[in-house]
Image (cartoon, rainbow, N blue to C red):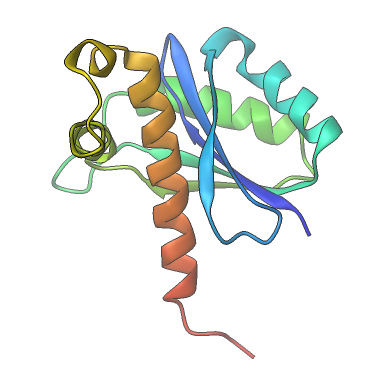
Length: 143
C-alpha cells in the first residue's frame, strides 16, 4: 500500500505532507525550498511507496483559478513528465492558509512561531491532504 503525498506549492518554499501507509491520516513531512522540490519528491519516492501526489489548486472565491496557478502548473507539468508512474491530482486549496493560522492559534502556538511561514506551509499541505482524504471517503463507491 502506498502513501499519498500532499503539496502546498509556493514560489519560494513548499509545504509537503504525507499519509500513513494505510492512508488514514496525513501528517507534516517537511517544508522545502521550491527549487529543490522535485528532487526532494524523487528522493522520497525512492524510499517510500507513493501512489498519488495531491497538489493544492488555489482558486478565487468565484471558482476561477488564482494568479498563482501560473507558477504551479509548470511545476505540475514537470512533475507529471518526470514521474509518469505517479498520478498527480489537483485539489482545491481555498482558505487552507487561513485554516492553518487558526489551527496554530487553537494549538496554542506562540505568536513568534506563527510568524514562521514554513510552519504555515507545512500545516496547509497537511490540511489539503486531509481534505482530499475526506473527499474520497465521502464519494460513493463505483462498481
